[in-house]
Image (cartoon, rainbow, N blue to C red; front, side, top):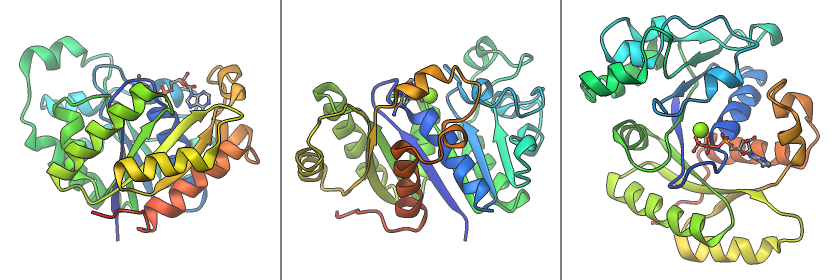
Length: 255
Ligand SMILES: Nc1ncnc2c1ncn2[C@@H]1O[C@H](COP(=O)(O)OP(=O)(O)OP(=O)(O)O)[C@@H](O)[C@H]1O
Ligand SMILES: [Mg+2]
């Protein structure tokens, strides 16, 4: 059975796109059919992250939403070099479909949900992964509402944790499937047990993974994906934990 997994954060820069890219790669290397959709039309990232391993994108989610193509036309083989045949990326924008066009014209939000379903069917996907813009805009809320599993990515600081509470509250109102939280960029020396207790008591949801801050990620400069470059790193172990927890349907939803 296919599954839609959405990554969300209330504040920006928590690591949604990096986490989504690496989870997608790990799933694909395990033989799952995966499509990663960049629903972050305002500040896309995935086209840059996969620029070296996919063809130049002439079609995108934006082209689809403004009626220029079918959603399937915007799904590109994303990691041809590694031979992951069942791995696709739908970039947020193309050169032809800029931010001004979609902001100026608007679009029918129903098309988004329809597009997700079409991708699952026509690409015979096991997993559809949705990366989102931080906060709550149309695309993000639709992606959240479409998800079977919602992963809220947060840093461990007070501001971010307070924001994650907003995300969980909205997710509950939307009736999202299973909710889980990953705390990212956790600095060395932070007491994991205290962090876990804090998150679990505040959100009523099991903490799926504590992802360490990895200085190696900063020095990669986008040349390779982290999980490919550092397969033994504790951060990759955390990504794997998210996969087994979220994609097997065992996340700690307690409401
Ligand atoms: N565990 C980590 N350790 C160190 N750096 C990280 C980690 N996770 C992500 N980063 C870095 O943090 C920055 C933000 O990551 P990313 O773009 O994935 O966040 P985002 O939540 O998608 O941001 P936005 O809200 O802008 O879409 C990037 O430079 C990324 O390399
Ligand atoms: Mg992002």
